[in-house]
Amino acid sequence: MQNPSSLYHFETDGTGAVHQPGVLLVLLGAFIDAGNIQRTLGSHLLETGEPQIVASFDVDQLLDYRGRRPMMVFDADRWVSYDDPAILLHRLTDRDGQTYYVLTGPEPDYQWERFIEALRQVMDVFGITLAVSAHGIPMGVPHTRPVGMTAHATDPRLIGEAQSPFGRVQVPGSLPALLELRLGEAGREALGFAVHVPHYLAQAEWAEGALAVLNAVVDHTGLNLPNDDLIAKAGANTREIARELSDNTEAAQLVQALEQQYDTFMEGKERPSLLATEASELPSAEELGAEFEQFLRNNPEA
Image 1 (spheres, rainbow, N blue to C red):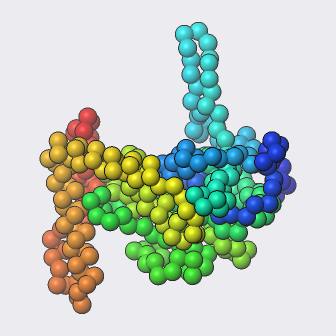
Image 2 (cartoon, helix red, strand yellow):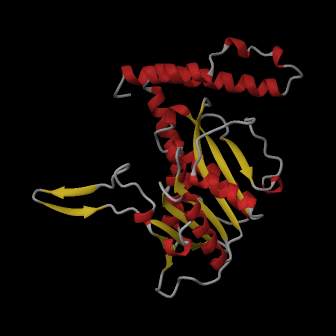
Image 3 (cartoon, rainbow, N blue to C red):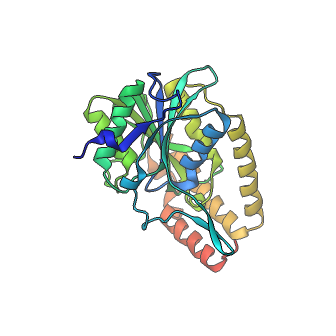
């Protein structure tokens, strides 16, 4: 492995490598982030706080520019701007004055192990002892029911009595997931939250899911994070979804079917036997998803 320390540098504006312990929120763009949970949460925290960039990472060594080309603006006869990617570590304080950190930017394409070791070094400099990640996964659930979430951690005590709907599964890896694994192997603490995003909202911004993650982070870390703007955004988001469904009978019916499936499942959890439910008469999440995708293909303006 090449020297990890050459992957990062501390800012030199007087607010750089100062030992100020706090929680690290890892909000790098993940392999999958249904509902734009990471981007929504990260934007909210940076816009409502007073972030200081304290460290940055060398994206030229980490990104595949041709795989996901940054945007540029051409104006008549010249290039006028370039949306240069950046992986940045921001330092903020919560509403009680407690320090915390937010890592934002694209997920590295290359050198995952080296980047993780570099990040561990940076965490040691600042005194960060807990890393928290979050992202969204598409699920066959309705947006009209409580937000579901799968919690995971390097130590079960970090997530308490949280229950997972999954057993042992194999999934494509991501840098935040590998970071949690490596931190756990090193005896360090990390936890994460996978929000269950309604599959019909996977490509949209689902502020309700981002708000659920923020609340989970508050509950598990003790941070007092700002939430007013996100609450307002979630309310507006929910009203907009309701308006669109009121104008689209087929989509509304799909959501109603998901509601029935969800309610039947929850009722079944309270019964001694799932045979007492009528879940077998309901369409599966895969069937609903296929029907919804077919509906979108037939109604491109929906």
